[in-house]
Length: 213
Image 1 (cartoon, rainbow, N blue to C red):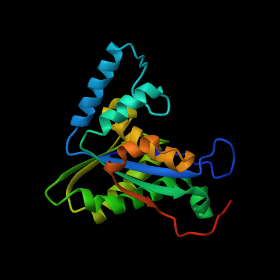
Image 2: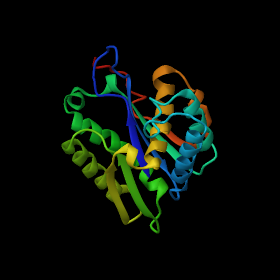
Image 3: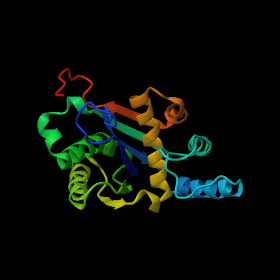
Image 4: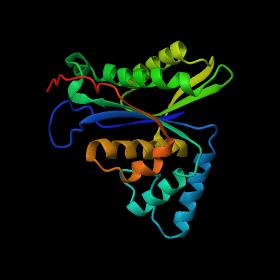
């Protein structure tokens, strides 16, 4: 499983502040999709499409996004997303960003973990490296706790790697971006391409009616 997040932790209504914080995971039986993505990068280079760094949906040109999403439509993967509308977060969650991160990932894995790994499976969870060392430690502890509580597998490990270090994390970035574009900008062009892969899209506070800012 490879995970990423979208949105910022500016708890205010202002330019540049996202409405939602989204955590997303992509589960694969193996890392073959990552190998396919690296091959696509080489093909694009031969076509003269400049890639100064690794794939990153926010920064890539549309022609590159089109090719990546065309690839994702054909590979074997499962996408799960948890959506948190930030204005509905309790003030105590807004004040402690480390706790908010841990909270978001905890509820994501609480839903997803039992559904992706049986007692016979080995589960490697790799999250795109985010925030401070303290924040990553908090997320790690939260993920380890929820996997221990809710997953049927007893063979698992959690790692934090920079997104540029693994093409599978770049796949997670693209899927997370597509979900975010749908929720933040009402733009579902890319979302529709991966929609058959999306197994859950959980709006955690959908029943909430109180806004705190």
